[in-house]
Length: 347
Ligand SMILES: Cc1cc2nc3c(=O)[nH]c(=O)nc-3n(C[C@H](O)[C@H](O)[C@H](O)COP(=O)(O)O)c2cc1C
Image (cartoon, rainbow, N blue to C red):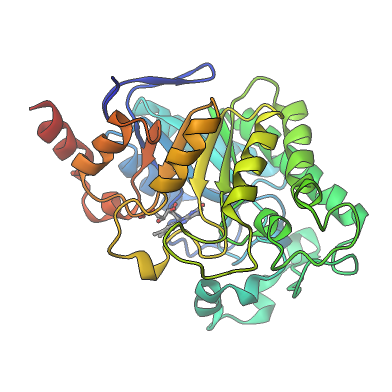
C-alpha cells in the first residue's frame, strides 16, 4: 500500500514521493513576462523543500491573455531561454517540474478574487505594446466576443506555449482549465453563452479543451500532459452556483479528456476557485471529488485544496483517494512541512 513517501510513475516520469508543490504564483514586480532573478530565487528555494514535483505558477500563452502585466509568458521563443534556466535550477534539487500554461479569458473583472486584485490597477497596465497586443476584458463568451478564428488562434497558442515548455526542458506540461479562467469559462454554462459548436451541451463546451489537447499533443510528442481540471464549479460541500458546471458533467468530461492522452488529472474547483473562503475549516475540500473520480478512471490523480497536516495527506494516499497531494499554503507557511512529515510518518 503506497504512502506519502512512496514513489510513483506518471507516464515515463518517476516521482520520488507523493508531495507536489501546486502552482503558487510569486509576487513579481517586473512586467516584461521574462523569468528574472525574483522567480529563479523563489523556485530554487522552494524546490529544496522535499517535494517530488513542482508545478510552476500560471505562465500565459499570449500577452493579452494575462490577468496582470507582471505575469510570466511563453508566447514567443524569446522566453524559452529564461525557462531553461529556471528548469535547470529546479532540476539541481532533483525535483521534476511541470509548467502550467494558461489563458485568463474573458470574464476577468467578474471573478471576485481578481476584482480585488485588480482594484488598484490602471487599464493602461494591460496594454502590451511590445507585442502590439491589448487584452480584451469581455463579459461573456458568445460568438461576438470570440470568433472561431480567434478560438483557433488561442488553441494554437496553447500548443505553441507547450512546445516552448518542451524546448525549455520541462518534464511535463499542465494545462490550466480551472479557477474561472478561459477554459473554465467555456466549460461552465454560467459564462458560455455560445449557440455554435462551442456552446450548449458538454461535448460542445469541452470542445476547446479537446482541441487544445490535440494541438498540444501534436506539438510536444511524448511529454506527459496534466490537466488542472475543475471537476465542478461548486465544491462538494456547497452549491454556490446552481447553474454552474455540475459534478456529474465533470466526471464525464474527465473521461473525455483522457481519450486525448492526458497523463494526470489535477483536481481543483471551478468558479468557486482554489480557496473558497467558506471552506477554510475543511481539510482537503476537494478530496471527495478525487475519490469519486478515482473510481472511474485509471490515470493518476493529484488533489489540492486545504490539505494541512501530514497525517491527513498520508491518509489520502493510503486510502487511495488520490495518487499525489498538492500542498500549497501549508508549505508557504511552514517550509519544514515535508521534512516534518517525513519525521512523523517514518519515525
Ligand atoms: C499565492 C498563491 C498563488 C497561486 N497561484 C496559482 C497559479 O498560478 N495557478 C493555479 O492554478 N493556482 C494557483 N494558486 C492556487 C493553488 O495552486 C492551490 O490550488 C490553492 O492554494 C489551494 O491549495 P492549498 O490549500 O494547499 O493552498 C495559488 C494560490 C496561492 C495561495
